[in-house]
Length: 500
Image (tube, rainbow, N blue to C red; front, side, top):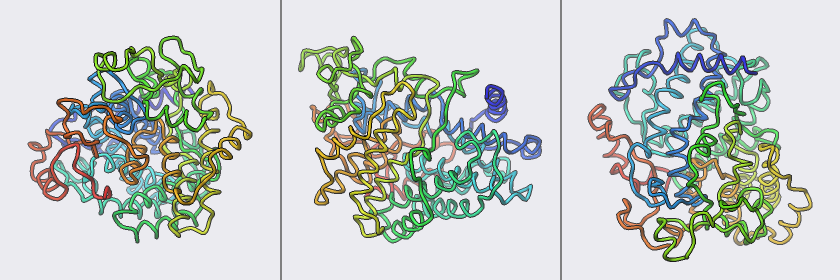
């Protein structure tokens, strides 16, 4: 395994050694040289790059998304998502890092496979993974470079157009479907860091990703949402926690192999669990509470000691209002989640079951909403010990007791489903932020119900997107202006197309 990761680091260095100035001036490796590298080895690099480094996971994932979605809180004002203030570099961090790495690499892989006439499993995986890369980018930003992205060397496109999000989604869904159809019996070998060569699991992931993207469109294009949701469910989605899409990180030899969130935990002690999240866990006597959170000061996980920090308050404001210090509040359990060798999770079986429950309520699926809901809750609870070795196991009896105390109620079915979805996507913050914007569940209050933070960027509204880099106004001016005229101002409160 260590040999694989040394190889991945070397490949990643090759891929990322070009300067990324002038906007999108260099979006791909030289195809005349890239073909010298076995394409399977390139997959290992793009999987790791998609998991991301400390830079974007600190900024776009934790500082912004986790704070906005009220999974976490912080009194440190550079945690700008907690105060709805704007730090351009933080807000654009995934955009800035993804295009010269993830996007460049996946487009190069597809180019090489096309040149080699490879239309089998490798191409199928590439098309599925390409959709995964772009869907996170478009969910965060809205209209983005898509059809022309990554074509710097390949086609000489140095200033790519921003595609409308509706067009992007239609194409991603079609690409996933086509990619699934190309999966065969051959594998990516040791370069498959997601499923270790299990193509059946790739097929399930493809359909599960299709379901996620389809359900994202429920408010913007219900007909397309229903059509692809039904295709995904009939095709065969994840069937258990063993199908979860995740990448297992290691402690080295270099940073690319480490979990970006874990690196943040190593570097920063300022994040706490949000009062909103902890109150939810406590309100249902959720067995995840004592696994997920501990008191910062003494690492106690006794339920009485686990108190969530209110959002939107500085250290002085917190002390003045509550007479407490940040050490009195719960933080994510670093013994469970804080390791640099922990897995990065992309999509879970629990999420899939909750989406099937929603589809059943909508009449798009013949399954029973309550059964899918119960399956999702159980999967979300029991996946913790499977993914994180230091997490205590939650037994079937504990799950049953939880569900018996709060049985599925069809009259508030959507609220129950998506509140649990929100809980299940802790540390999958891009997805948590996207699904909350689509559903409005749970019903979050700006700043967690605290007073409006003075100097916020949004006039007290919860942010709805991340901005595009301001540099695009000069380096890619025509396309940048076209995107603004179509989507709206480049602000944190402008809604993306599917966010109705």
